[in-house]
Structure formats: structure tokens, C-alpha cells
Amino acid sequence: MQLTYHGHACVGLTLPDGDTLVIDPGSFSDTEAALRRATAVLITHDHADHLDTDAVLRHLRTAPDTHVWGPRSALDDLTAAGAPADRVHEVNPGDVLDIAGTHVTVGGGTHAEIHPDAPRLATNVTYQVATSGRTVYHPGDSYTAPEALPDGGLDVLLVPVSGPWVKLAHAIDFARTVPAAVVVPIHDAPLSEVGHTLTARWLDTARLGGQYDYTRLSVGESLTA
Image 1 (cartoon, rainbow, N blue to C red):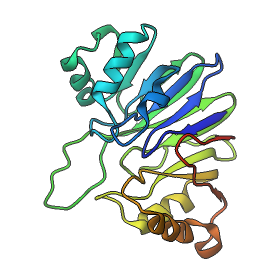
Image 2: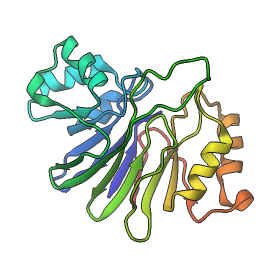
Image 3: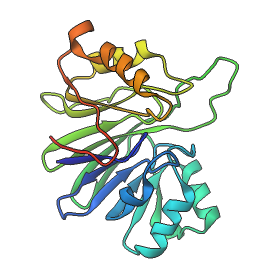
């Protein structure tokens, strides 16, 4: 499996047919590069840093075979902007999808709390994607763990590391308790290089333990798991 990081919360996964499945092409991401070969787009929730409505709509207009899956709130934004209704598909926690031979399990349902006085209006789903014999987990804006894991754990766990709802202690616990061979930090647009360095010091297993390789990717960089 090849995973390419496109900035902030957006990653692309190479499908068995050579096309790409893209998760969360948002406004802080390189959406043009992410969507270039995309035939499948997964959206965790409707916040702009996870769904750049204009970019996805432009892609749907030029790529008639592309379909989008996401919670109803995200799909409402797309259809209101003109997305074809027959190419956007609602998902809910517990759904299992087969997308071009790729197995996708939908989980989650709740956006992480920003503050007790701020209502949690967004529906946030998670995606566990199994393709080419490898599994990657995208939690969206949450630290919700997968309900079921493959034998031996995940190949790649994507861990949010910055944002108004993020506490680094929760990121550390998430990385240590969800078994994965590789941990890749995401949701990192607010971080400076100093912030990345400090975050890596704490998430690296040398300080607090864990059984994974912490691998930060630059925008456009890929890893093969």
C-alpha cells in the first residue's frame, strides 16, 4: 500500500487498480495534487479543513467516475453546491463499504470536544481502510479507536497532533493504545517547525514507550507499508 500525505488531514491511498482513494481533501491541503487521480473520496466531517467543497466539486465535474462518501452534513454541503446526487453517498458508523476492491469500515460518530461550553454539532466518522493487504486508520477530528483490528494491528495509524480540540496527552495515549506498525502525524497545519519538533519528542517511543515507528511525512511525500 502506498500512502501519500497531502497536507493537514488529507491522505491518498493507491487502490489496486492504480487509482487513488483520498480522505479529507480540505482547505489546508494540496487538494489539486490529492484529487488528480482520485476515483473515491472519503470525508470524515463537514469542517472546511477536511472538505474543500469547491475543490471536490471541480473534480467531480471533470472526473465522471469519481464518487464521494461521507456523513449527511458533508454531503448536504456538496449537493447544495451542485454535486450530482447519484455520486455522493451517505455513511454512518457501522457501515462497511467495498470501493474498487478496497474494504472500508466506518466508525466513530462524534467530533472531539473543543470546550464544554461549545456544542459539538459536527458528526465525525472514522475510516479503517484495508487495501492491498494493508490497513490504515483515519480518525478525523477524534481519538476514537477502531472497534475491531486486524490480526497484528494496523499498518498505519494517522494521529491528529494540533488543533483547538487537541491535547497532546490524548494523542500520546491514542498512539500507544491503538496497535500499529507506523504512526503518521496529521491535522498539523497550525504547527510551526518548533511545534513539530516538540510533538515528535513526545510521540516518539523513546520517551513514553509504544511499539511503532513515528514517521512524519512532508506534503507530497509517500510511504509504502
